[in-house]
Length: 199
Length: 216
Image 1: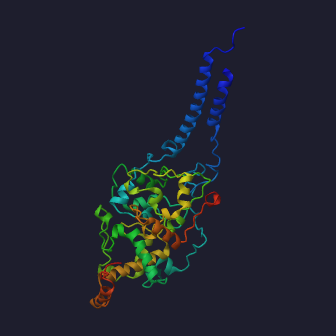
Image 2 (image 1 turned 90 degrees about the vertical axis):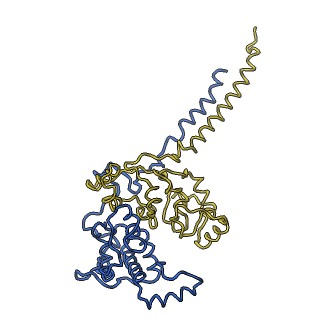
Image 3 (image 1 turned 90 degrees about the horizontal axis):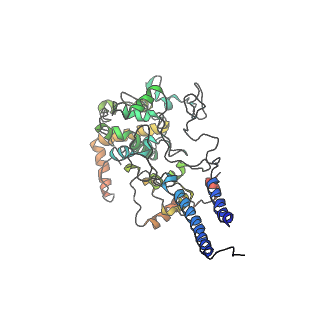
């Protein structure tokens, strides 16, 4: 009697405490992205590329497109075709990566500047309005003053699209009166859409 | 010869039967509750991090987009944990004397990675890809909750399989317009059933519930 009374709970508890103790499939012998490892001295499983390695798709021979310069001078043309879609993509990327400091208008009064970061110059300064477009690409790629490089965060062609959007912002803030007159009546007819703006 | 069982044996037998059943049920119940509860799933548990990084401050107060730091979320399975360089973009100038940001400067000076504690972990037998969810109208907050309300990062969902399937069986319940994917305060509209069905069609979203969808 005594023996039988304990045997069922004993089997049950045994099953409960010994099940799910193998986690081979949970933790497989591979590294997840950015996982730590004891194998390399710096503890990183994600390895930096060895010097002078050229990965597939990273052979950057088009100097103008990848550096924004030709013969050491900033280029003043877009090395990729800029369509309306590219401009919209540029606006989207600008809002993510640039607007925190440069502001949505590009006037250099973004939220992070209000928090104490050094104020960047306004895109609407004559110096930057007249700067060749390659200059903006170069600043995004290599940083400038207090600004860090964004090369690792923004893809090459997206940097050109942002540069194109900066041109659009400059136009929006310094529009010649004739242009404003051209656009304004159209927009008023467009079901009350507001004239101007950066959209 | 006396009886082997005295009359009280009846009671002992009954009590034993009831006790064994109760023990079985309560042990199973307890195991179930523990398995689904925060003790196992870590839901709402914010682990200590090397730097007390606040999504609430950076997202809500500063209005920084998710993608400013999680740069690969649109193109990769992995959302991307920001390298120290991204922290230093601002923190070389702001809060650059504070003791809480000291590990960032140490990492920048030494080149050693900051060892963040991972909050959203999946077992290795689960294949998950951020980019396909992001590009098909599943918002960040659909899984990660309102991170703009989290001073320290924690999970709001179990990431259990039944939770995944809840959406995979009927994506229309959780899909949102692509323009709202990175809006962490997004509220599903009253006509979600109607809008969801429309978006599922428009974005060609399939209800994928084959085992091999996630276990490959």
